[in-house]
Image (cartoon, rainbow, N blue to C red; front, side, top):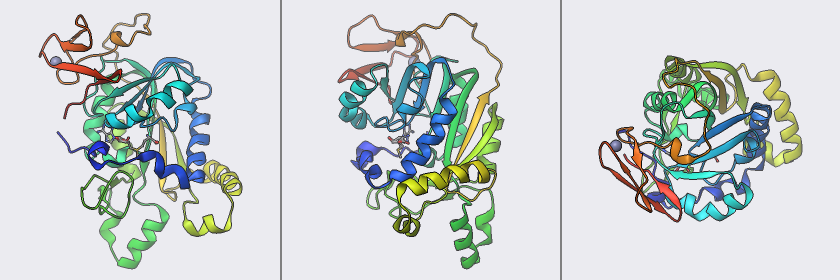
Length: 312
Ligand SMILES: C[S@@+](CC[C@H](N)C(=O)[O-])C[C@H]1O[C@@H](n2cnc3c(N)ncnc32)[C@H](O)[C@@H]1O
Ligand SMILES: [Zn+2]
């Protein structure tokens, strides 16, 4: 199993990261609002959703949103706030590589600011293909390896290998988002063509590409206020999303797979979509407080009313 950026081991409070990033936060949320505003669906999956920063963007369009995250501590710490603001949300601790859901459970979903922690995106996309339904809308964000600043820096270094489609592993310590110099962490930047081909290989058809956070720069922030930056960002998202200039890229996709499961009226009961994250077998909920896999006998417990399905 690939390594995981375990925020609980790093003791990392992700909500603090956003306190000084109002522009980036609004740039992403405005884009996601636009992508989900006209959707109507049942189960929705926010993979690596943490404390629910972007839940407002899909909450009103889907009946049953799920936030899945490997950091059980983050979910426990933020449970009250999330549940007060978004009562329909279910919180689940699990590993994105091995999700505790039955085949074809979700009609919509996204992953934002998590793929840099996923060192084997092809394995993750395979698992995502399994849990999403045919025709599901899935939005994938990733940090763009070849954004304009990185390209210029590579040219100055005369580092021509940088321009290949191979993932770029950022040195730990430079970026604090879920990585610590002393304790490690995983931080990759990806080439847009590389992610595009992996998504397509797994039947996610790319409908639209969007660039985001075009103005991410401390110097620009010093001169322009947030409102003006957000206004310019909207124009840049409309006109320059076809380029690889910005540091963050969103692919809006539709999953075009053959449906194996028969289409039935989908229930709103979480137990109807849960499965063993290890062998994908059926779970028994007969005993109070835990679920047991009928096939491999693994047991999964609830902590503070949050299912813990984490396996590596
Ligand atoms: C930088 S945060 C992004 C949170 C949220 N998506 C957002 O945009 O605000 C990355 C999150 O991904 C989670 N994560 C990292 N690797 C994971 C994995 N293998 N499975 C599930 N969650 C993971 C971390 O616990 C963390 O909460
Ligand atoms: Zn099992």
